[in-house]
Image (cartoon, rainbow, N blue to C red; front, top):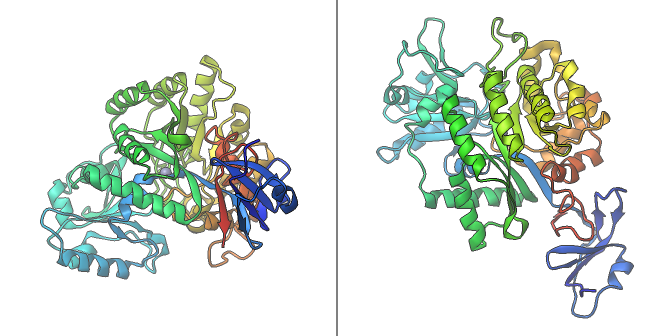
Length: 510
Ligand SMILES: [Zn+2]
């Protein structure tokens, strides 16, 4: 037997093993758990050279895993204005300050505004930004990432006028008189993204490391990156080689921006040709997923619904791809052994994904495909059981509840009965990997677990919880961040619990 390198004792260790056992001590050798048990049992395995750490009764959980976030965006907003939790006035003050000492040629960029939380919850206007920044372009992403608030200077640089048609899959929102309001959605954001200056490789390394700081701060030892380009991964790989990147990443490939179909298909094939790569750099980096977006967001009313929005009759949101287009890409990714992660918020998008998964699984059966629908937020009642039948994993972000509960009912009325259906999914036998979609929300896993268990926001609203019958238990919420999350990346034999033989990833909670 190997000698014990390090032993932790006198703790309250939630192992998340199959018995959900709680122990007090564990031993480590060479980055793996060697044994888990009582203080006495573990002491007996040590010699005088073993380093012993007194946990002083603190709680220990397996290293937490966020299965849906965006590494580059998380780091990038650390380089931009962080607008999370700010009201409109605070944002305008910040933009004004920034505008006064901006280098020529630069844009003011920011991320994280949520109009639903403002006193005046209507969409903001370009005129409001023009008052504080008349001469420099401003581009501020809404927290959901599917909408941006822009000023007149930015609109002028991009060359948009009142006559410019909406690009497919996006909207240049107009006022009642036909004038440009100053907010754009999805594909219309890309017109701006093409003009915004890009970050060089050194900046991009910094961006990865800034994101890592944020993850480790919260006890996230693994994250699933929902959409990276081969270039993003090359940058990241360099950091693993240098030993500067420690956090484990499970990576999914995605064609950046919001490309047209031909471009998306062509690039996807190029990316998929690279094949899957598992467990690189001492199990720190895996590339195994293929990410694709099927629709937008509920907040921006760009989620793709079977029936009209309650608060905008005649509008169902938009699917990004026709069934034929998406079937073709789905088939190619499935054939090459990639795990497909389809972003589906609206019930129409979810149905499209399920239909396609069903088709490709008939053509090429794979009992352990683990294809995922990211968000799986609003579902047609008939589609809920299909997740179990097809073995499709719904990847929820329970933290979304604290903002979405404010808008969901207005948007979709009593269809919310089939939304955020965590309990129903668990009871029918689905595993639920959790996450935050950071930077859409903070990557704070404790806030997300709190929403999972209480179905309330951070202010305890609504009392008793929003549709509380769909809440998770505390143990399920922990599983959604550990063993279920590991399953979501084919890694349940490697991580997700404190058990002998697994990677020694754990968090001591203060
Ligand atoms: Zn996302």
